[in-house]
Amino acid sequence: MLSSLLKGHLNRLIVPAAAAAFLAVAPVAHAQEAVRPYGPASVADLAEGLLSAVVNISTSQNVDGGRPNVPPPQVPEGSPFQDFFDDFFNDRGGPAPGPRRVNSLGSGFVVDADEGIIITNNHVIADADEIEVNFSDGATLKAELIGRDAEIDLAVLKVDPAAHKLTAVPFGDSDAIRIGDWVMAIGNPFGLGGSVTVGIVSARDRNINSGRYDDFIQTDAAINRGNSGGPLFNMNGEVIGINTAIISPSGGSIGIGFAIPSELAVGVIDQLRQFGETRRGWLGVRIQPVSADVAESLGLDRARGVLIAGVVKGGPVDDGSIQPGDVILKFNGRNVDEVRDLRRVVADTAVGSEAELVILRKGEEITVTVKLGRLEESVDVASSEHEGEGEAGELATASVLGMTIAELNDDTRAQFEISDGVNGVVIVEVAPNSAAGDKGIVAGDVITEIAQESVSTPQEVLDRIGALKGQGRRNALLMLSSRNGDLRFETVRMN
Image (tube, rainbow, N blue to C red; front, side, top):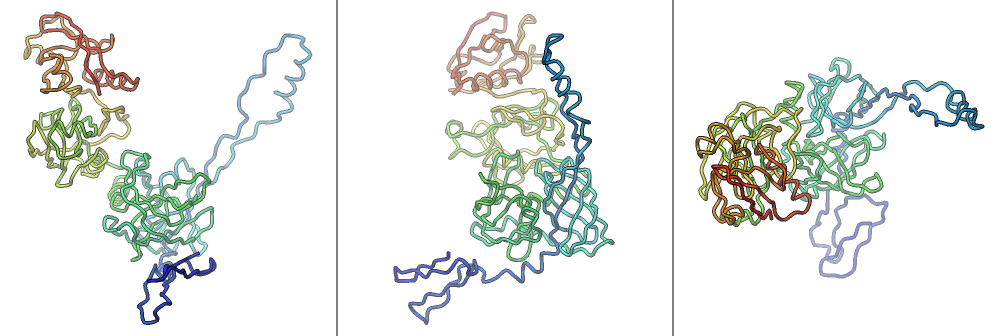
């Protein structure tokens, strides 16, 4: 039911549920008053021009349908149950069924009619043996997978453009979309192809914890199973999002759907078309959020930026340009307010290109230029509090508990005049008024054990501290060695 509060009156105009969902309702109290629109009177013309560009994606996969290999129970020889179990497991089961075919449905849309390029979600076509594209006029074409990206959940397909006349739709500017703007979704919910739903942009920049680069548009336009991979249009008929996920206890739409913004998708699609894979930029650092306490200690006006917890040995910035304890505030002129901002902008930057970073170092903002490497997606990313911006690797240095730590090697031994018999991780700097500084820990001290476990690399120190925090510990017991090998214990608070 649609109700409109009459201007200057308490009574309401009630519209039957069978009426159109979006009407221009005029107050009846004053005939001379202008009509106040509450939504588009119709989206029929817009939908008619877009339906032919939206396709249904049908996939099939051969899976092993054999009976599980369950051994029969062991019974004593001559037991009255022996014949029963032999009969059940060997004869009555009959021949094992062969491979079976599993089908699934999704949505997609044409972005290049000349080349036959179609976009959908990666999860729509994942593990598919065959992919078919079904058009609104009933035509069906086999599709070839050009490339896919699991992180952003996108896939690029190709059909033969000579086999069917294709209609393409353009991408729009998702950055220009505002909360409250009208949007339209077209897709294949529950196999009902060519379904059109309309709603508004409910929110932007949503993080639903589906991946490292989450930045979804939220909409209340009805999105259901089968809409995945379909387009979210603005009222100019431009694709500003790719429908990807919903929140629903029942499996149906409850008005909370999420779309990948076009601004994030276009660069990935271009790389998939060009290379068949995504090639993301990489800084080679370990990063963590800037908390309110950290911001205050650094003199920041609020919690913003990304704190560098460590530098990957041999990585792009293992030249001193970025140091543990630095806070990245801007990347190529774009503000970096939180961890996912940095991940996204670094990943979107071309491999091998130079980037200009504004960082806070020891209370001063400075600008540094770095050259990006390539993020190898096949390598696991370090997790825990000191989460990796890029792939895992041996840390040359790291920052933890107010200390900058480094590998104990010939160079650091000579620098701090550490005896050959001392082993562990050397402390190269201690921040004033830090937890470590309060305990009298100084540069040149060597961490040999944490909570009675030996450590030999900066990464092991980070991992051990992270594990203690995960156990709810508030303090870390460090065994420290002086330069000449004298040992002592210090308890350093971690919160």
